[in-house]
Length: 233
Image 1 (cartoon, helix red, strand yellow):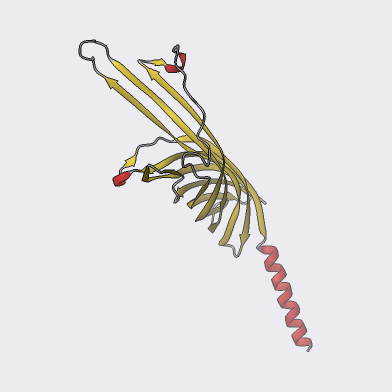
Image 2: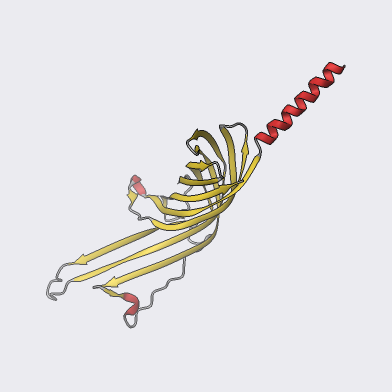
């Protein structure tokens, strides 16, 4: 009986020591994003979109199962979207002798509250550790923004008389813009023993966030790179 009690006591002590050695960690991350859309139209032709710089910030919680493996989640505010530009030139119109040029850009911002669930693998290196991982993410759209710039023969259209540009932004739930986004992400980081970290990542959206009923084959999905810093404790 004494031996059984001693074994249970040792097992309990080992469990407590293990729980203390592999705790739950909390932290925060913030940084910049470089986002765009991957848009596929009928026939699989990909639309050309440019990147839109923005930001992300959030809190994290990490459950460590061993020195080398953990699961990290949390909530982040992530700003995504894309930018597109155009430049149309017409040579001298027959009988008029005038060159025409119409150019501009449109930027759409989509802001989400995002929940990632990443499996992380940690390898000691130098003054800290290299951390590699990935997993799914789920996003809920909370805000949109948009900006436009149009030029006619080099002059801003909004500066021209009798021209009214409607700059009302596209809203979630309108014109096929879905609030829900999900996909997969990969992440890499270097964590110093002090708790400070430098993080990089890439998000690959799997859901079309813009659905045009007149063109059901069109698929517009979020993509973005991120680079930032964090701290865990």
